[in-house]
Length: 370
Image (cartoon, rainbow, N blue to C red; front, side):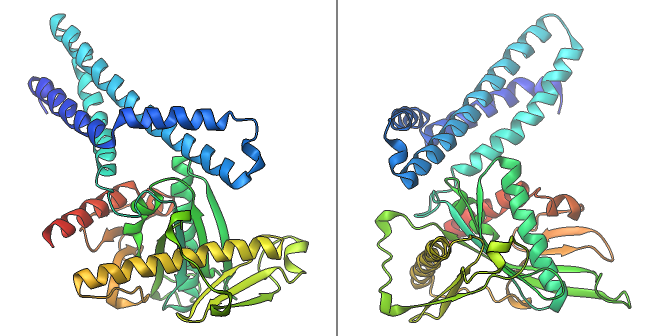
């Protein structure tokens, strides 16, 4: 990009940022933040801990969103001023500095623009993520654990709080299944494009002959149920089993019947939770996950009626959405968007933003095409 193009680049970025500010309604976000700050300062806030956590979580999210938008606007304005001064003084070093900042600003504005594409009914919700090992034996269980770490690292990179509800460990290595929540607004809309079957190709560390192994794991993303959703589950439609927790954990976790398994009889959906010490806490967490599964099932059924088709994550060759290849070459590729990178270790360490953004854009284009 030539320095002669910088003014036009600044003008284009300014127009895009103004559009984002209008779509996200920055003024409304500021008003909502002021209301939440008032609620957060109420002396009786913590009398209702669930409500207090909801207020503080929403406040932290809005504060972060507003701060990001304001910093972007400041950076863009500063870049324009620096370019004017640099051109007036024929300062080539400063002009080059503006060029570097424009590259960074383009990426930051593009990331923010993706948020405007999240307009689905449940997109603004927090998310519950379920991972399960598919075909591939012990390699699949190990892959499931790698995926769980990948998503938790992604959340950590962004400062998003998470809560692990269940981790069911496989006998030799890895996980049979795991369920956790990402507790930030728009987590569902953001992560929902990660649903599907993930495929790993590598030299198996569990094969003493060093053969290449293909394994699969399924990822399911569900919106957290809100009070207005009316997902009621009659007691006679739900079976509750308690058992002793297994896998890593403290003495009180592994020596008491604190783990809970909920079975929704009409649908056959089974949810377990064993990461809390208390049976009551595990039951409450399991119920939240079950409600989330039923809400996602309802959403998919409604979507299927509109589209005339059903979608299910089976954890095999049929519905792959991303491949992670470690041998004979290094590549991670999304099979829907065609986006790919040659650094799997970075992806497994939580560097997922480009894949997620490409997925959100692909979904929006698919919806518009339909």
